Length: 462
Image (cartoon, rainbow, N blue to C red; front, side, top):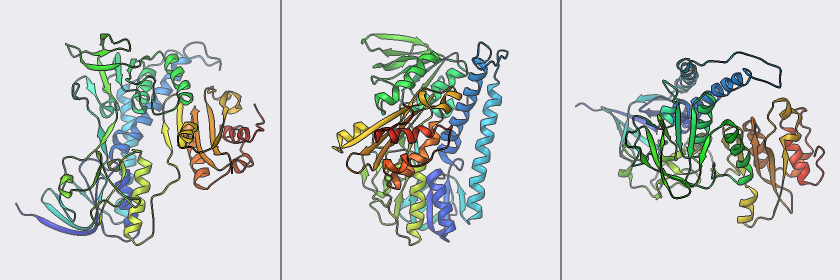
């Protein structure tokens, strides 16, 4: 076989959020760049993750609201019983994905990035093969992302699905069992319940969303109960039932029980994509299952860089994007380090959850003397008009100088508050800065100001 050779300054493996942002920024800076992607541009996030999941969540919520109006509604709205064409819903979701991935391709082309379609195989730190093309580079950027964790006794296939298949259903199951009550499992479990499926969640920990503190989780747990989602805590799945149409599990009492289900969603986490492309040949220093990097995303091999899910927690698209942009600028000669004061994390459950910076519990554990205060949405006029009064905004600040070190919120649409939260921390704001800023009325954002006021001892509306 004839091998064609090419050369470039930067070679990016992976066209997800981190990889394509790095390539676009490198192109803007005049760095000759090749991006290799074996599937579709946009990676997990745009194709089978962040974007399609939010589309499905929106469609499910719209259907759920319409179903409410078929009965008694305090708003005075009366409708007939709604129906849903899941095929059309999935087609609408796919249309959004296509527009976004097409936009990524156009931006790469506009900035002079060459996209090579195919699966990369690393030969060494300077050479990669893609089919019959051998590419030599000065800088190699690994942005290969992550994949869903598969349970060895319950492999994906048939009635057992990952989030990938759950986001493109051909039909709705009568009964969906969700294994894992983290953010992925609950986001999709709530969406399927709102679409009309019966949903059961099985979680090994003592509560749902075990990564979050009790106060934040309580409104979500109450919502699950209202929606009629069965939750089995301190329970573990043992495998599929004999006929494959259900699961066997050990419940909190230690009893082995069987549960019928026509679909099982396994959502027990994600792991870095480290296999299948020759990563091991580089002999990079590892941090457990992740590639070890410094605060410039350099690996242990000179001019080999790594970003995103491949490099550890938090495994979030916006972290990968920020890292990718930084690496491109360092290669271009700029002085940059990845030292964010906070990275926002959002859980798109009902209600939504946002965590930015330190929680009160983390401050105590780290021996940081802090004050914290919460403001409930039950006292917020805009939340009342949105029929979304569950939840609160909480601020955490140093006791000595009132510098804000953390924000948390749970409630309807609080994901949109995350930008204000992280900006205040990055800019070194004090409680007085937020408390003294005029917030528009009536908005959910007023709860941000009120939380700061309450921490200072003079909340106005509670």
